[in-house]
Image 1 (tube, rainbow, N blue to C red):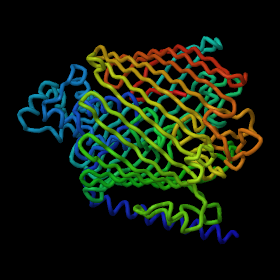
Image 2 (cartoon, one colour; image 1 turned 45 degrees about the horizontal axis):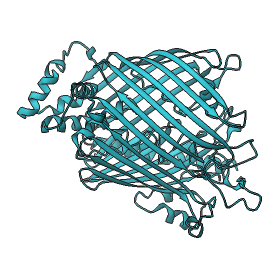
Image 3 (tube, one colour; image 1 turned 90 degrees about the vertical axis):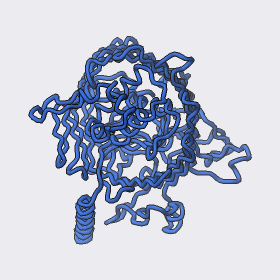
Image 4 (cartoon, rainbow, N blue to C red; image 1 turned 180 degrees about the vertical axis):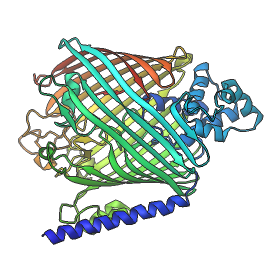
Length: 592
C-alpha cells in the first residue's frame, strides 16, 4: 500500500514538473500580457456604464466573462475617446480618467496621435498626470504606492486595508472589522504577468453574517477561526496567479482566484461567492468569439475534516463560449462537470482535459455519475441607455416530468432576468438595476458532497443556494466627483429545512438522495420553490462612499435586514449602522 502511495506521489510530482516546464517555455515566446482587475461590484459597474453609453461592444471585449484584463478596459476607454460621439457627463470623464490612471502602464502605451483622441486626453489632463520621474518610485502615480515601469520589468505595489466600526441596534452589540495587507502586480518583459494579494483580517460581524457560512469558514473566504469568547472571526485571504499569451489569440492564467460568468449582480453560472480556488484558465479569442476553458481543484464539504487534517478534494471542468452576435447582442453557452476520484492515485480525470469536447459525452463514456450542468447567458445593449441580460442553468431533468406539471424533484434549473438603465429618467449619473432570480429545489446539489456545485462549503453560484426566488433593485448615484450613493433592496423567499435530518432542497451541500417529499404520497413529485419552512427576507442597504484620494474611501452604511418566518429559529432582525475607511480593497457587499 505504501509503495502505491509513493508511486502516485511520484507520478503527481512528475506531472507538475512537466506542466511547470511547459509554462516556462511558453512564456519565453509569449505576447504582450496584462494582469486582471480584481472583482469589485462598484468598479465593474463603472465599466459597464461606459459600455452601455457607447452603445456597442468593444472588439475583443466580452463583458460577461470576468475578471477583465486591464489592457482591455483601457482599450474600451480609448475607443470612446477616439470616436468622440458618446454623450459623457462630467462624472463619466472623471471615470475614464480614473480607469486609465488605475491601469496607467497600458494607458501610456495606447495614447494615440489621432487629433480627436489627443484633444480628449488633453481634456483629462492625461499627458500632464502621466509624466514619469524616473528618480521617484514612491507615489509616482496616484494608483500606486510604489511602482517601476520599463521594458524589462513592470511592478505595482500597494498597501491595502479596510476598517469599520458599527452597531447592531437590534442586539445592541458593537461591531468592528480590521483588515490589512499588500497587493502586488506587474509584468516581466511584457510577456509574463503576475498578481498576488494577501491580507489578514479580524472582526465582529452581525449574527446573520456569522451564521451564513458553515463552521470554520467566513462568507467568501476559506478557513476562519471563530472566537467562542466574543464571537469575533479571524481569517487570512490570499489570491495570486501568473498569466501569459503563448500566441496572440490565447491567454493562459494559472493560480488561486475567482472567475465569474454573467452580467448581473448575481451569477447563476459561476460567481465569486465562495472562497478562491486553484484553477488553470485558457481564454481563446478569435473575432467575435471568446472561448473560456476552466479546470479547477476545489475542496468538498466534509465539515468534520475542516478543523484538522487534510481537506477532501473535488474538481471541476468548465467551458464557456461567448459570441458577440452583433455589436449590441451577446450570447453565451456554458457547461460544467464537477467530480472527484477517491481511489489511491486518484486526482484530476484526464478525460476532462479535452478543451473542446461535450462533457456529458465524457461522463457517459467513462461510466461516471458526475454532476453536469448546462446553461446559457444573454446580453443586449439598448439605445445607449440600457442593457438587458439573462441566464439559465439546467442541472438535471427528465423529459416526461419537465412539462407535465408534476413538479418532479428532477426539474432542477435556475433562471435570471435583469436590466440596467443609466442616466435614468434624464437624470445624469443616476443608474438603476433590477434583477429577478429563481432556483428550483435541489439545483446544484448531488448525491455526494464531492460533486455538488460548491467549494469549501459555499455555493459556486448564488449565495442563497437553491429553493428560492429573489428580487434585487439597486440605485447608484454620483452627484459629485468624490461622492457616490448606493441603495440596495433584496426581497427573497426561501424554503429552509426545519432540522439537519430534513432536506427540502435549499441546502445544496446535502445529498439529493435524502430529499424530503412535500407530501406523504411521494417524495419525488410535487416539489415547488419555497417548500419546507418558508422564510421571507427583506434586505435594505444604503451606503454613502466618499473618495478622499485614488482608491481611498470613507463609507457610511445603514442596513435593515428582516427575516420573517413562523419557525422562530429562522426569524431574525438586524438594524446595522457602520462607518469605515478602506484603501485599495473592494467593499464587502454581503447581500444575503
